[in-house]
Image (cartoon, rainbow, N blue to C red; front, top):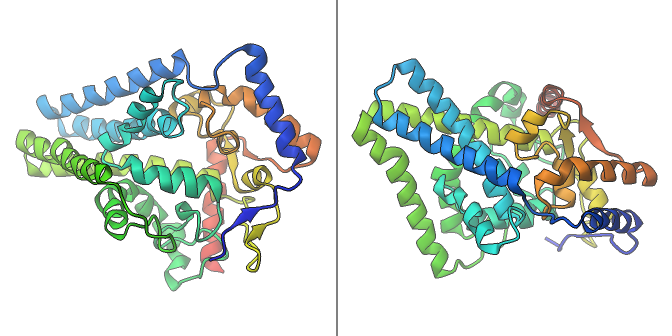
Length: 355
C-alpha cells in the first residue's frame, strides 16, 4: 500500500484554530494537561474499583447484589480506561512524565497492553481516522462499518447481533486479540510486522499472568469456580459494551466519512484537521454526568484535533472549534444526546447490512 498522506500544503483552517487554542492557554497561564478535578476523579474511580473487588471477593453477598456489583465493576473499569489510562496514554494526564506513565499502565492492570494500544490508537487511529486498512478500530470482525468494506451474507443480521460483539469486545481484546498482535507482531491484517523490545515481552507476560491471577485465580479460590467465572463474564461484558459503544458513537454514525486515498499518490485531498472533523462526531456535550464518566470522550472532535490536551479543557475548546468551523465553512458533526447518537449508529449499521 502507498503511504497515505494529507494535503497540508495550504492549511489556513488548521493554523487559525491552533493559534486560537494556544492563545487560550497562554492568556490564562494554565497548563493543557489535567488538573485537580481530574486527579480527584481518578482517585474516586480507583477507590471504587478496589472497594467493589474486595467486597465481591471477601464478603458473602446475595446473588443479585453480586451481579449488580459486577456490572458496576465493569462500568468502573471502562471509566478508568476513559479517564485515567486514555489521558496517560496521550500524555495529557499530567505535566509530569512519570505520572502519565503510571496512569497509562492502568490498562495493563485491567489486562490490556499499553505498548500495543499506543501503536494501534495513538498512531493508526488518530492519524488515519476512518481510513480503511489503516485505522484498525473500524475493522471489526463480523461487522461492516462502511461501504468500502465487502458485504458478507451475515452482515444483513448485524443490526441484531451487534450487542453480542460489543459485549465480548473487552474479553476478546484481553484474552485473544493481544495474543494475536503479540505472536504476529502486527497491529492489524494489513499492518507491517514490527519487532518487540525485550522489556515489552516481559511486561506482556507479566500483565497476562497478573490479570489471570487477580481476576480469575483468586476469585475461584475465594468464591468457587462457577461464581467467579460468571462474575468475570458479567464485569467483562459490561466493560466491553461501554468501551465499544463510546467508540462507535464517535466514528461510526450517519454523516461521518470514510475517506479513500488516491490509489496513485496515496494522498487524501483534505488537510488533516478537516479530515478529523469529517470522520468524527460529538454527542451529549451538554451533559456534565456523561462528560465526567466518559472522560470527555463525548467531545471526540476536540480530542481528535488536540489529543495532547486533557479532557477537562474540552468544553472551553469546543467553543473555539465551533466558531472556527463556522468561519471557514467546515462541517461539525454533533448529536444533542447520547440516545440520538446511538440511534444514528444503529441506523448506520442497519443500512450497511442491507446493501
